[in-house]
Amino acid sequence: MAKVRGAIKVDVEKCKGCGLCVVACPTSVIALSRDVNSKGYNYAYMEVPEACTGCANCGLVCPDSVIDVYRVKAGVEA
Amino acid sequence: MVEVKDIIKEENLVYTKSKILTDKVFHYCPGCSHGVVHKLIAEVIEEMDIQDKTIAISPVGCSVLAYNYLAVDWQEAAHGRAPALATAVSRLMPDKYVFAYQGDGDLASIGTAEIIHACNRGENIVIIFINNGIYGMTGGQMAPTTLEGMPTSTSPYGRDVKLAGHPLKITDLIAQLPGTEYVTRQAVHTPAAVRKCKKAILKAFQNVGKKNGTQFIEVVSTCNSGWKLSPVKANEWMVENMFPVYPLGDLKG
Ligand SMILES: Cc1ncc(C[n+]2csc(CCOP(=O)(O)OP(=O)(O)O)c2C)c(N)n1
Ligand code: SF4
Ligand code: SF4
Ligand code: SF4
Ligand SMILES: [Mg+2]
Image (cartoon, rainbow over all chains, first blue to last red):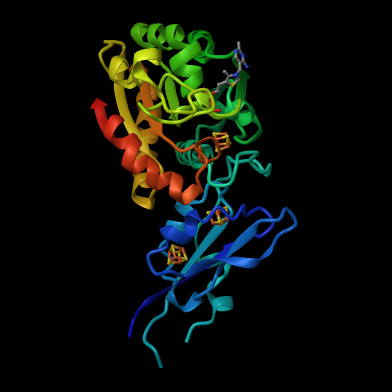
């Protein structure tokens, strides 16, 4: 099945753990980590990476611009 | 199955931080609307390719240090006086894209005279107005925009309109002035709202490029620290309580 796959890269040290990306993601990919960065924030990460479509909603709402979004056409599955 | 490592490659990048934003980490609280709006202005400047033609005016308020974050030329105004300084800059350098960035305490309280008269004169400037209904920087005091009944540090039992007057819908007043061309009220709480707000900022900058007069964009915003809510709850509170008083949409233009 041809489908779009995506992935995000969070700048962990600059993430403030606000959680706005978590609620903006339509496919519930993102969660806040139990671990903290050096500032003590529970940073965002892909908990369910296979559900990411690369829609960039998380990036759009991130107040600190710390999410890079990548997207590929996954093509027909072999 | 495509692996994450095969997706995270330069050629697949579809969204990243604007090049107009500097590497400095915003001093704003986690989840603060100021950061989203800074990013949208940066994206518009980048897409219009006007980095060397933009002069920004920063206010007094939480965004006082905005000049650290967008790599354009800046002037720092005294509290509330950003529209007066923007007037001077745009008259001296009429071919520049001049914008003032102001909070609600800055714009609708101490700077009421400056904003009304700059808009009434139709100065060729963009005003970005961050209305979070509170004085964020100084500890969450009541602002002219604070909602009726809304608790703040100086109205702990909620704003009493008999004592403090009604929430000031300054954007509605500004839309009445013949000098303003485009007046709109936006928000940045959802991906759709962020996209819309960016379109509004783009339109405002394009209009100023045509020397069409004053462009005014209110962004109904959150101050989750001042409101004493989590960033996510603050957005919900804003939708429920701020939007009925400050409804989104174009007021003019
Ligand atoms: C002349 C003067 N009066 C008062 C202050 C104190 N002061 C600093 S910021 C501020 C209000 C900021 O509120 P707002 O413009 O809404 O910005 P926010 O922090 O909410 O973004 C005040 C009253 C000051 N710095 N200068
Ligand atoms: S929106 Fe940005 S700063 Fe907030 S948790 Fe997500 S990645 Fe971190
Ligand atoms: S790109 Fe879209 S699907 Fe992927 S994590 Fe971000 S919001 Fe979720
Ligand atoms: S005090 Fe309010 S306006 Fe200021 S940075 Fe914090 S959340 Fe933003
Ligand atoms: Mg304010």
